[in-house]
Image (cartoon, rainbow, N blue to C red; front, side, top):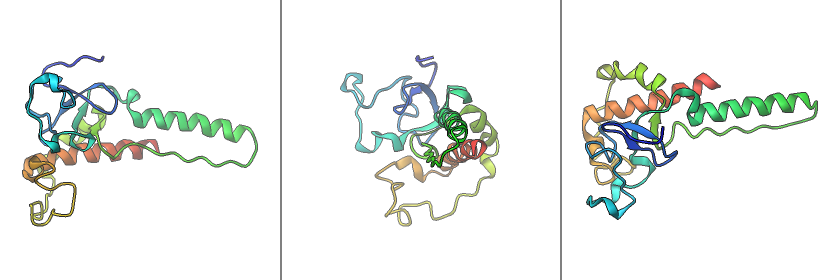
Length: 166
């Protein structure tokens, strides 16, 4: 489906809905808020625009995730290359685990209930993160421990999905 429900936002990578977590730039905004358009009447800060501010759970089922599609296409290409009985090379590049950090529900849900047990180092503060994209001016929400744990859910879920397909 291409329409949003409840608190969902539209993933700026694939155009489909997802449920944002606390580190997402549009968390707490009305469903379908578009930061790339001035039509919304929402004041937008520079850190809120871009793929690296998108975090959450995908509304698409696993078989429609970019990771699944790339893996399936790669397996078909591998079968074809093997059958041709010639020298070949196949390079497969997965989008995940890179921004936007929206994970397939099947994998996201596995980690959601465990987030309370995730370890967040005390170095998650402005002084230690000054040379990273996770600075307070890049995303002020990244400094909140609970928000960081939700970010970890998305990241771990994306890594697991790639691992599953490899």
